[in-house]
Length: 110
Length: 110
Image 1 (tube, rainbow over the protein chains, first blue to last red):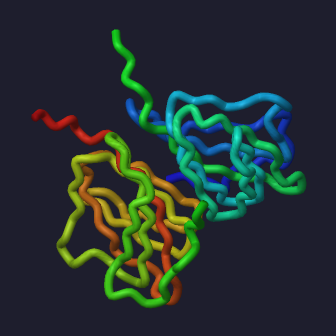
Image 2 (tube, each protein chain N blue to C red; image 1 turned 90 degrees about the horizontal axis):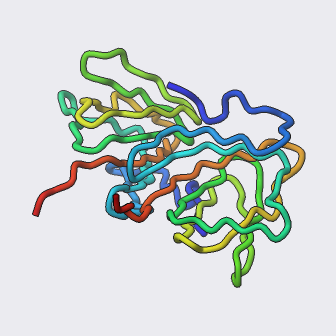
């Protein structure tokens, strides 16, 4: 058994991504941010849907052509595939812990 | 956007299961226990694997032929398909909030 809040670094040059489960159609990740945000003008544009929850800290999630969303502990959102989004801001004075479940990737033909 | 800790009932006749995502190969559920446990002698025996984390409260998870596991907030465990398990105990004085991701179900033939 492991704990999502264990081994939280207090300073990080970039986000820390730990893959907890990877199994065909699903990937579960813990992501730790320490005040990081996405580069200006960068958008995530993913082939998978992403269900994501903030478990600690706080973040501002920006969407293309949609209002930004401020996320506090327990807040979750389901981001459809190819919904462009970026992390506008995470709280600088403590680690923000995200849990993300990626799913529904298109089946690749051989 | 919704919150995993919203609308937590303080007394429940049985566990409260909310399906947050259901999409082919994956199902994400919030489960709220209020001191419930699995009936004596009952085992979950699932065709899917289950990744599960306790986010609030406390629980004791029992496995067939394996030591029980006490789970506190942030503790997570990945239960393989058909690993028999049951909830031995949840803390009685507050809601225990679980987040469960079911995945890897066998593909059913038509």
